[in-house]
Image (cartoon, rainbow, N blue to C red; front, side, top):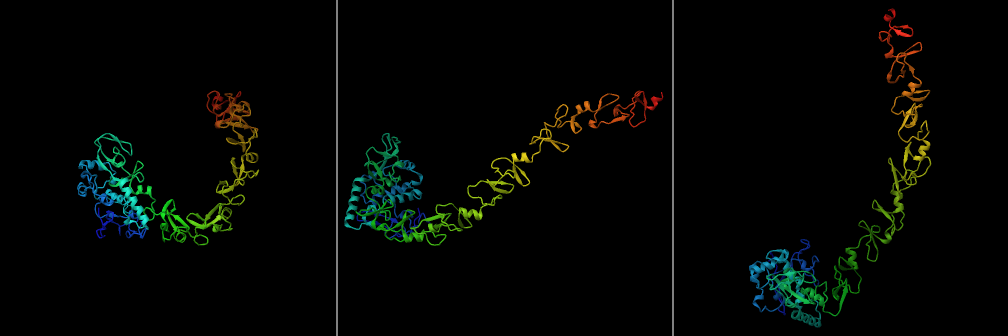
Length: 548
């Protein structure tokens, strides 16, 4: 793990024998990056003067590998097997290892931890352990030398009593060893096999054991750093969260409150002098303040940092006024008015156009589409009927004949207007020549007169004539068969009707008629069409047969 060697080493031995070797001054912020020039401790807050981020979010590190007993000011462990030896940990490749285990069992222990929490040298786990030492064992909880808020001898006495009781009765360092019998984990209730490495915490109970990854603080759920724990009500805690069960912690300076008087605000407990504006440090006890992003601000600082300027009057919208907003634009309540009629828009429907706001009526009058029937605007919620590029209100889209709204009914266009079906059939639809009914579809025309297909039939036999050969007599249609039977001339030779259908030609002579194919010599059957012929007792003969 790389450190800034230019930063002076800080080694402090407190009167209680606590050894702290933390380097924080000038260290980069892990949240802000290059935006923060480096950590600079606030006079009394536990934050950076430069970026305002908490101290523990900066790259604070320990100059030397930390022995947790030194940090706590405790004497060296009497049992050699439980003594933490820095050189042994470094030899194994870690900044800490559970004492009393073989190299094989140390690896077994580490393999059960999350990868990013294994304190391997040069890994994220090494940094994780450094942070947890600072967070779980805050130096201001361990020695009064680091407490800036112990202002009276009584408070210092209370701190000493708290520390003594904690160290003698509550806090202890657990240990890891092979489990001798099948047990269940105190945390997850899962099985811990015999021979498996487990963590033991004697203050909880001689038989109580944990999987290495399950030995965590009941509050923050983080691995208890170097197996250091506090026991309360059958639960284990890191020192920080145990202390907060006993005494309130001021969120500003991160110190425990031993004073009999403190201030409760934002569901937290502050030293009286530490409830201050996050920007200017003005004391806020008995003063108005506004909470923004979990921090309190005095009224002037809030207005400077966060108050929006009104779109209408351009003045800041202070905390005493309602801030009405729309699409990142803000107004005083009294300034939130229609740009056209100046009526208030508070609790009223409105619309925006060209960076101006309008009441619904003014917006519709100025910008809404217009009906092609009445020229009135289309207001919100109105139905709109569109046809061939034009648009109408529902009540304006009417039949040109009866003037009734079309609504959802069918209609027929006529001369640029629309006509409902009943009116169209009454006024404009074609009617059948035979039945005088309206022809809706499938009609036929004959001599410029319309007919239903089913009505256009033979006058004699009622055969439907659509698609059939027919002819007319005295303006009445007849099928080919009926026409032949009723009106056609008969051939003098074959006696069949001469209808003329299919382009059939015929010959007439002295009111007698022949098919062209039947107009032949009676004797030799030579065609006489276009040739001279003789009559012999009513029959036609060619000149040659006539002479013989």
